[in-house]
Image 1 (spheres, rainbow, N blue to C red):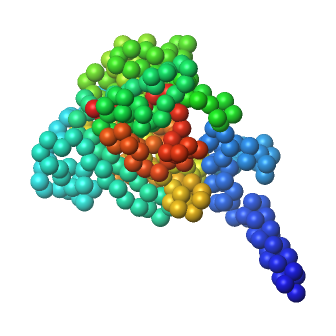
Image 2 (cartoon, one colour; image 1 turned 90 degrees about the vertical axis):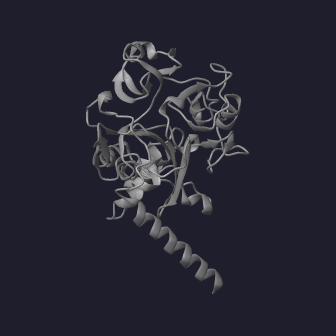
Image 3 (cartoon, rainbow, N blue to C red; image 1 turned 60 degrees about the vertical axis):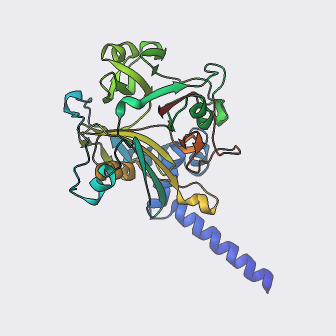
Length: 331
């Protein structure tokens, strides 16, 4: 009898799984496929369950469409004194601070994920750095932060990662640090996420040379752009990028820089979970971001404070970090 009961339970579980994967409710299917396709090394999971045609159909119903605009730097005003009277609780969380305070971390839980929003009051202190072994191998973010005396650090942009086990040796697209082009992407225009000599977070499609001519001093490439000139990207369905740990960067109209790091509450239960691009847009809008862009996420998503890992990254190492070629730091 016990054996019969066990077999019946297994049958029920199997039927439930089949209904999730192939039944009339598309929510699970859409989220599973878009999440898998958003990763570097787990796209194969989508192809195990679904055909190329099914995956294309799912992606066609879940996507993000950028505004097509590029940052207008003249709209950033650099006036972020504490007004002492606030329009909302979110403005109070951002603007209320001690005199001379360089940064603060706003931390909160949503239903499916945990948020670390690092608020940086002086945009001139934000820059990119590269691995000490750049071109040969990457470094953990915490180590790059320590070696560069960084007070705050987050992971940066796109890089090559063959088979999902790459060593983070180099960026595979435009990378600029301290006004110098480290990678030029062979003159191809790409999605540049940069900070100008005037300390404006600048988003746009350009070559490395064009970025330098525009006065970009530090930049990486990734995406999508989430908000440009106060306008959020259009999203259909779940936004097309599934659910993953996330890192993003934004800037308010008053010049305050926002580092967004999100980890999934699934960490508590043995799976990573995370947030959608829609979640990121909503958080950035809530806290007044005027320009914002997605950075590398998943196993790359790390926040370090004073050289120590602050969040709970999900890579396969003792600290949960993976090797990276570059990072954004505050020093």
